[in-house]
Picture 1: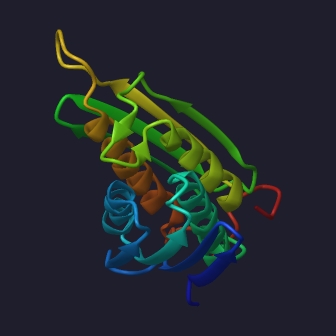
Picture 2: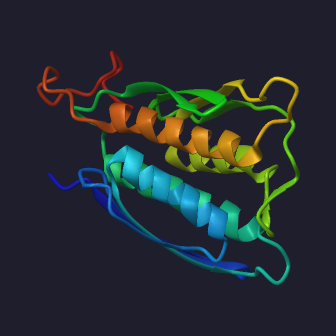
Length: 203
């Protein structure tokens, strides 16, 4: 059974197209107009093992907020649709990812109940010209709500001795950790015989 989805989200502020294949090979075609965000979405494809297309046109003349938020919502919706009834999946996933001085832990439950916990240090306000670091929490909240998942993201270590956190490393390690956790959670469990992984019989 194909675990794919195609989602279009069109508002007065943005036009977003997301296509995903959960059983892909990690290929990606990403274009949001926000360079650093494109780089982060590539992490989801590569480290999640998903084939992912994202094309967003947004009101960047205002700022990047709507573009980033609406893309995260469409991505979450695509995950939810591609998972279908979630029969046969592992459901839970976790990953701890180092990136130089940074260490991030992510845990996910494809529960059908959106809940996001996010903990990171205070970072420089921007990465690149338009990516506000305050948006990272909003990405996980938007994605989690639309994907209907429980997601915990914790930055366990960030600063070099006597130094300040490298915002690029802190955010990128989060995307890699979440991607690895999602890869585990969305994987087919060969021991489940196609059963829905819940005593309720539904997720």
